[in-house]
Length: 71
Image (cartoon, rainbow, N blue to C red; front, side):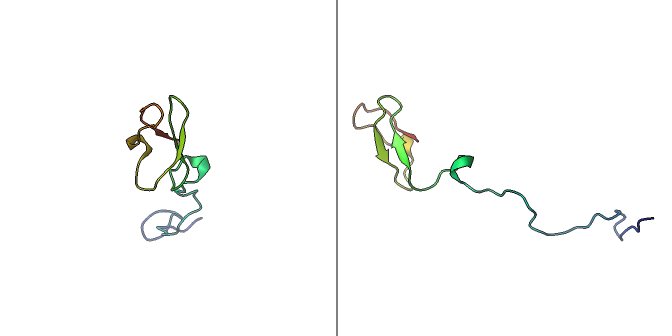
């Protein structure tokens, strides 16, 4: 018969391990936004390099004056 630990749970410890989860990585496949990449106009397709700290939606397309989006 299994022995119970002091908290009354049979075999369930209170570990503080890091686990084996996938984490919060912001890689390309998970859709995370990182420095670099491009801002693109959804209307005409014009592309410009993304500047860190400046969201693409705050930029206006120089071709058609539409708000840009992150590629």
